[in-house]
Amino acid sequence: MRHVSAANANRHFSKLLRDVKAGEPITITAHGLPVAVLAPVSGQAATEAEQARTRLLGRLKRQKPKGLTWNRDALYDDAS
Image (cartoon, rainbow, N blue to C red; front, side):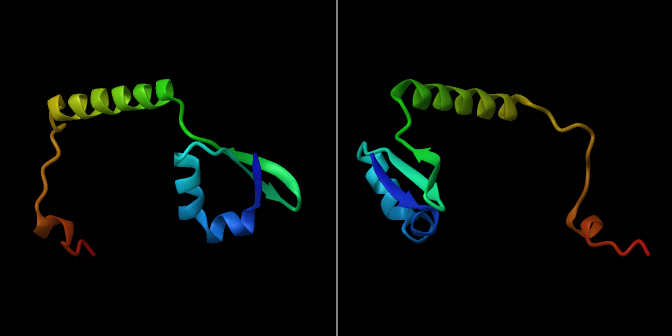
């Protein structure tokens, strides 16, 4: 497993994500000590996340607004 300092991880985050997406886990270090592991999402975790997203979006589409009515003018009305 490759080790990368937090500063370098910050500078090269996009490249690290590409490497992780390709299957390489990376340990992030701070002051030489490991603080996090950047690793690919397992197939099961990805599936669970997608299922949760689908359930949430479905619920939001079915959900009715709770009596809140406003318009653009009300948002910018000066109440003072």
